[in-house]
Each structure stands twice: as C-alpha cells, then as structure tokens.
Length: 109
Image (cartoon, rainbow, N blue to C red; front, side, top):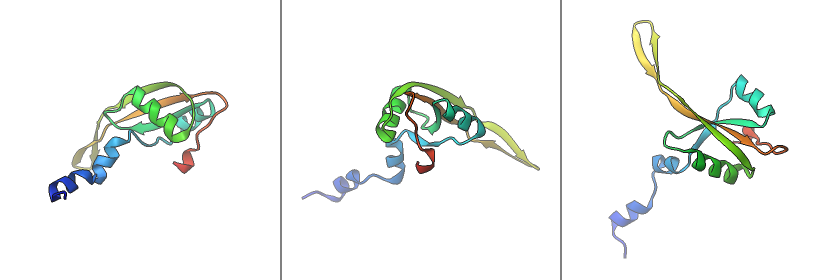
C-alpha cells in the first residue's frame, strides 16, 4: 500500500502540467496572419523550450510537417501609467514554417 507522500508525487499540479507543454498559445496579430498565408505560423512558447522541442510538439499536436523553426525572445519593457511604474513581462515566440499545401487551424487551438 502506498503512503500519502507517494500518492502526492504522482498527482501533477496545473503548473507542472503546463511546464510539460512548450506551446502556450498562437500569437495572433496582423503580421502573424500575413505570415500564415505564406506557410509560417507564430506561437508563444515556454521560455525553456528549444527548436527541437517546439518542432516535435507542433508536428504531434497539429499533424503537419515542420520545415524550420525560428525563435524570438521578446524582452521585458518598462511601462508607466500616471505615477505608477511597472514592467511588461517578456516572452518567447516561435515562427514555424510548415510544408507547402498543409495548414494549421489557429481558431481551434
């Protein structure tokens, strides 16, 4: 019989489950929609993700052939609203090129 500590180790918290997946969300913008017409799709990804992990997850999740992955780190930016100062969080995004003739439905993601 398992004790309580072993049972707690087997249950993943929401934060731990999110860490296992590298794709966070599609990055929807005007430029991203123009790129989508050319076969490039833009995703926000986890900070610790690398190109190989992103490629494998996109191929597995969307069932497409990935030709290349480009990564862009968006740095944190200072913000100010009146007297209040703060920092807009940075993030990492990936531009994924897929094989011609295939597409990804970003509205279903």
